[in-house]
Length: 271
Image (tube, rainbow, N blue to C red; front, side, top):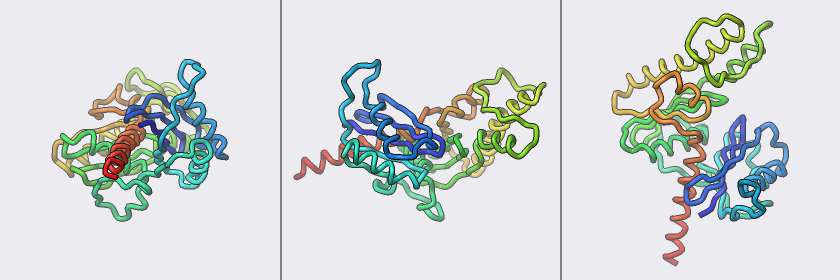
């Protein structure tokens, strides 16, 4: 079944087209640029255009699956889908509960992205009792799943937020972006080098230290899952990640779309 997947985060809206749980094309839009449903409709149209400039379009999706951590844009996303696709859509987990147990004070306050990533980890890595999921974005989150239970996690500022804070709260430190790569750990010999070394290896040390403490709490066979572009960059200088996913949220939504399709087919066969 063809489906459209929406991963709406604080920085970007990532859209993906999936066929039978395989993601075949993606586009992204800056979240700050989404001021009307027309922006989302244009992104949908761009996604449905076939690669390599062919004139035909991808088949119209049968349904849409949405992970959103920006609630104020949910109605706008809904309206865009209704106007451009007129197909069923599901906000996960609001409209499509996930098969997970929870040790969490208030599940309604738990971010959809963290929930969906935990679901993906539990599905993809059932051979490991403990799954740690590290997502380094606007915020850095480290979450723990034991068997099929979401145990809780940690939230701290993401590296780009930290860099913006340094620039805004100091008189002389410049604004820099997170470095795409660093040859080796060393003392910086300029202000920019000092900041790059500090944020790059400081992020690594932060994650390594927190995981050491977490593994002391749960001394069972575990797997550490990294997701997102920053995790991929860091992996060149640390072996903390056992497996990396470019976008665990979209992958989880694709898996859910396939399960929903099989469920709908089963119901139809029984009628």
